[in-house]
Amino acid sequence: MPLEPTVYVIDDDDAVRQSLEFLLRTARIVVRSFDSAKAFLAELPAIKSGCIITDVRMPEITGIDLLRRVKESGLDIPVIVITGHGDIALAVEAMKIGAVDFLEKPFDDDLLIAAVRSALNKDASSARHKAELAEIHDKLAALSNRERQVLEGLVAGNANKAIAFNLGISPRTVEIYRANLMTKMAANSLSDLVRMAMTAGILEKPDKPAR
Image (cartoon, rainbow, N blue to C red; front, side):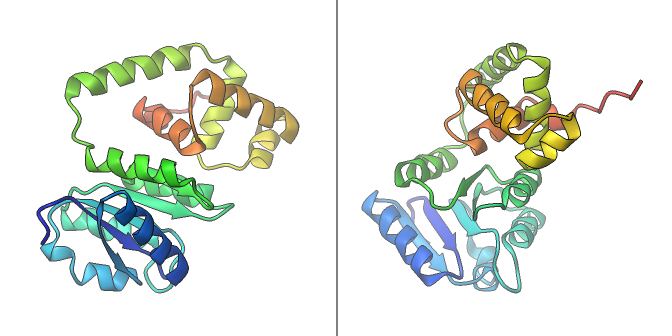
């Protein structure tokens, strides 16, 4: 095993896998790739650290199933999932299981490298975590009630139309609230917004009883 942190890329699409390999190696990051989750899991017992990048939709063993098996193995390794358009619900499910981030195709090269470096350095100090948490809570406090409702809908993995239906407003209005959310939360991407919301424990809060 290499002494340097290794990124394990798992994707059944040859073009995507080779593109990720090239990008990571260009950034001087050690990378190993696998064309299936099955091939990766065969080597899982020998892996101690690093970072996993996996596609969500794969034959036989999906990215979600892979994430569950990694967690069941007891290996504490950050996982970044790659999703196609319309896979937000799957990406949120992955983050609930333990994925540290998700990236939508087509993803920006710089964002991916930043996500990987962040994952490889996930053991940040508790002081930094507490400062981040306090900042997130301050941003959440500045949201309007409707913005908070849209945020909770996004964290639940709902599409704009579903959120609009649930709140009795138009999809266009949801888009406006969503844009306001991104600005107020200073989120660079939807995954960044979801991560902040989950860090703040929004998913753990029980729903208010209907009156």
